Length: 34
Image (cartoon, rainbow, N blue to C red; front, side):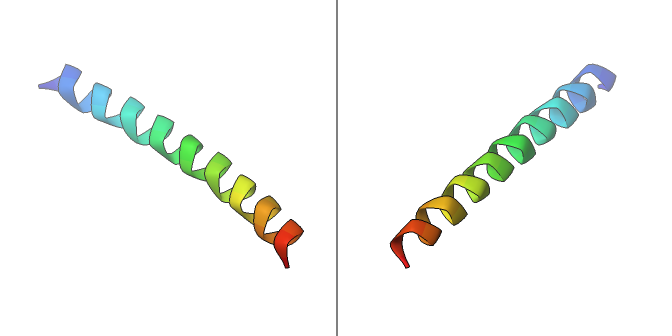
């Protein structure tokens, strides 16, 4: 059970980092377009 929670936390962190990178890239692309 503890291992599962640990994995979920790692997954959440990775997803959060990926979302942050995507957000930055999106802002960059949007900035170039408009």
